[in-house]
Image (cartoon, rainbow, N blue to C red):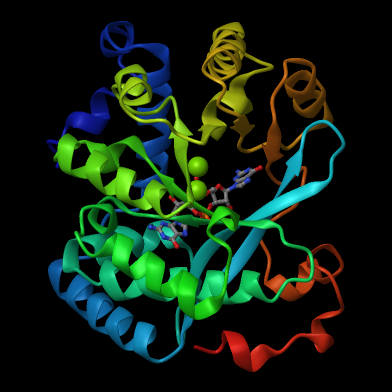
Length: 304
Ligand code: C2E
Ligand code: MG
Ligand code: MG
């Protein structure tokens, strides 16, 4: 982990100058995300025990955030985002428990639950939109992941091309060759592989060179800064150009304003995601888009 005084230096002008703009912004974002001090060891043990019980006890829920075609605004898919409906803490956001799940190995059952639930849900939609599922680094390194994905696709009847697996560059840090082999095997199943939070990693270009990603998602820190910082705008333009040259569709994350939307559309961005398009919500809130009223859907089929 980072040394205790590391974060104190994020914002120091010398440190800022030594870092690329993108890395600096990513660190600031990470600092904000990790701002809450971690609970003490006993608290963490309790939280881990709670999480173990919560996964088995049906306390996890999925919210779905729409992605739209930039060209005509039509929704083309959803990203499944997990939340933990804790009996006393209320709805816990993923960044408060995914890292703990990674550390404790609970990411195995948690990730499997998310994958199974999202695929089973999407298989019911009258409108065959894509469904995106996030994979954490530890999940990607599991040698049995391709077998699990195949089993879930077979069991749920979801067409492989409708499933998009999102990974971040951090998933490739540990053992690049092994992670790449995992990605190749997944792609061999016919599922799509997207690079999430693009631009916040440390080796984006070599990663792109090494694997034929089906999609790049520009991190929302760049989209957010685009209209107040010319360098952010230049980076967004450059990533869109890179995607165009490589033939990889680019999605902009965190689109909130019409100004951002119009700029991205004008620059050839393929898809848009963000509160300006639609917020993450339980699937029933998206009934008209997925086809048919929620009452007509067979809820027991997704209870697995
Ligand atoms: P992500 O995959 O990059 O997901 C996008 C996050 O950005 C979501 O936060 C979403 O609510 C938020 N977001 C989307 N549009 C906007 C916007 O316009 N403005 C702002 N301010 N935020 C926006 P959420 O749901 O809290 O998820 C955070 C992260 O947790 C995700 O980032 C993903 O890395 C992780 N995560 C979520 N669900 C899962 C999961 O099932 N498995 C794994 N391994 N990770 C997950
Ligand atoms: Mg994602
Ligand atoms: Mg993202």
